[in-house]
Amino acid sequence: MANDKNIKFLSKTNIGHTQKKYCRFKKAGIKYVDYKDANFLLKFVNEQGKLLPRRITGNSLKFQRKVAQAVKRARHLAILPFETDLLK
Image (cartoon, rainbow, N blue to C red; front, side, top):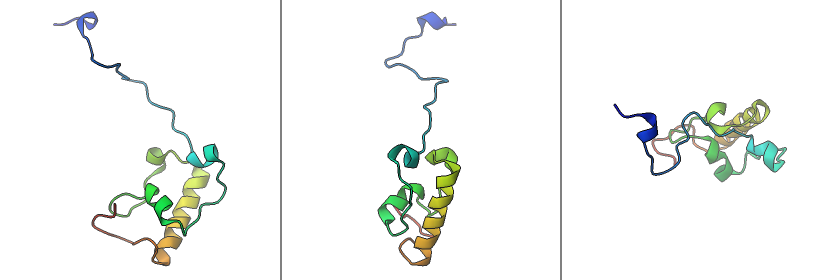
């Protein structure tokens, strides 16, 4: 068996160290999520058209709710599709 001291990596490993997630809305100072901006809303939707959860996007609860409402409004106005095979 190899000792831990004998194991060498080509790059620094980040095992057990996760990056701190941040809310991009609070960091940028955004107060309003525009439902008419489809390109911005696509960042919060996966390939099938489903909303990405908070644990993946890093949004706070307040802004995750605003994003969800904006996506629903955009779908209702046919700016975003309700469902699709490959959106991106």
